[in-house]
Image (cartoon, rainbow, N blue to C red):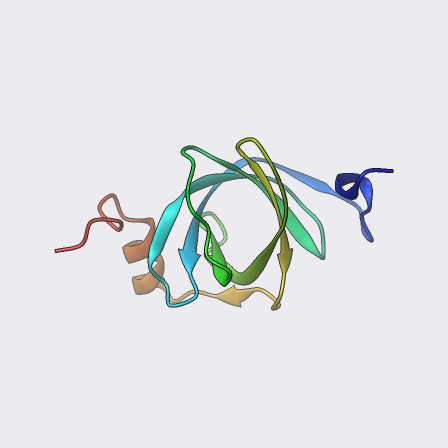
Length: 107
């Protein structure tokens, strides 16, 4: 059995839900699509290759939730991320800012 097939809970497909990877400090890393989720983690597809820091957060744009995550596996543009925290609701103003068109642009 491969590492990708060792799930402790059932997988739920999310139909390419939009997400963003952030640094632990909340800075933008890149856009992604959340392709499926379990109670323990998530599979995402990156749109561009990125250097990933040790500490990351995942923001779910649809549900306006975030998790602290760690990389478990990567295969091409797909990543397996383990949740390190329960989901954290993101306040409406912060969610609009993170999901905004120019969030990654620094001035």
